[in-house]
Length: 198
Image (cartoon, rainbow, N blue to C red):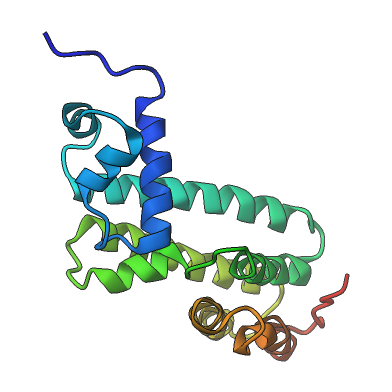
């Protein structure tokens, strides 16, 4: 008779996989490493996640949900100030890039690790990035941007550059000007100036 997984088994796997994937990249981590670090049997791991691809996709879905919970909370703190709401999302990305042990954005990193558009990890990563782009566009519209699509794309370039630069050269390298660059872009596109210090 098959053993019933203990409560919290899936959570335990996800916590270990998340740390390993963030620290080493997805391709560098094998299922045996996840098994070893969780202390679980192989059958328990594969019962929860029948393949590494499914584990990667589940990790990215959970990372996406966590990111948007934090992001929407940051945005909602500025209800009534649409320009500040837009700027809050950029600030949040800068804060994450300054966090200790930052190795880059897991969504950008994973999308680059897997070039096949049908790979579950790449699909989840790109879904997050498209959602980010769309959220910036909507926030730009709410802030009165004359060309919200252009503003969203420009801010995506700033955010992507911020993540890559911070991972490679640290937060005190070129990433340090990302927030002021985003503020300049928002000022150029929106009729009401962005109040970064507000």
